[in-house]
Image 1 (cartoon, rainbow, N blue to C red):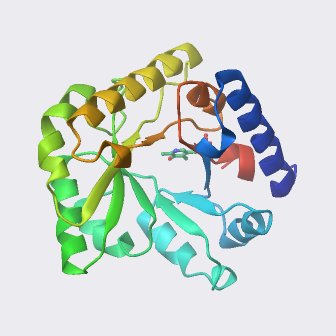
Image 2 (cartoon, rainbow, N blue to C red):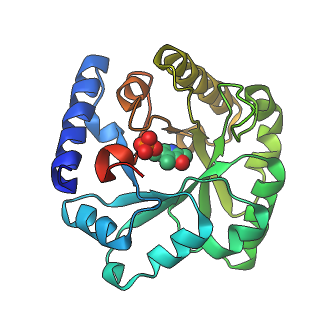
Length: 229
Ligand SMILES: *Cc1c(COP(=O)(O)O)cnc(C)c1O
């Protein structure tokens, strides 16, 4: 296997190339290194190679990893990108920079309640099921706009954008990325503070260059950095 440092470098080159093709500034694309199932030592290795933002999907694993000795006093930023049940919010709420996978109103409400209780401010993304696959989490695209006013009014939490996991078929994926971008545009028209609603978390190891071409601001890449799970 290639080293994590050289994998990261290769990905940054692909990000730069995709941005050039799309006429975008690479500074507008954040790489989230998805470290689920990988040990803290590899997170440390990636951090030492310059990677700062990491994504985790499983609450228990994330909590353990974030407390691991090898990451002590390391100023990395954690993103929670998995499915989040309401009863697990308390376990991660004070450890994350951004929660990507809020997929129902009741979870956003509970996130708000927990944030108020702890006097925290939490940023989150709504997960949207753009592919319509029954196996995927996420709101349906037509649920999002009608809920927006209620979501914007929840205290101590801020909706920063949308997240999706696209279909394996690359042509399908491109259409889904585009539909998420269009949905974000619609949502911004309803937002009290549209500038805050700026994030599109989309694109993984197999489709991040296409996601960048369709305006992704955050890509979540695991396998291409850390190898197969
Ligand atoms: C695992 C995972 C990724 C990373 O997938 P790769 O194909 O390994 O890059 C991205 N997003 C989510 C939500 C994931 O669960």
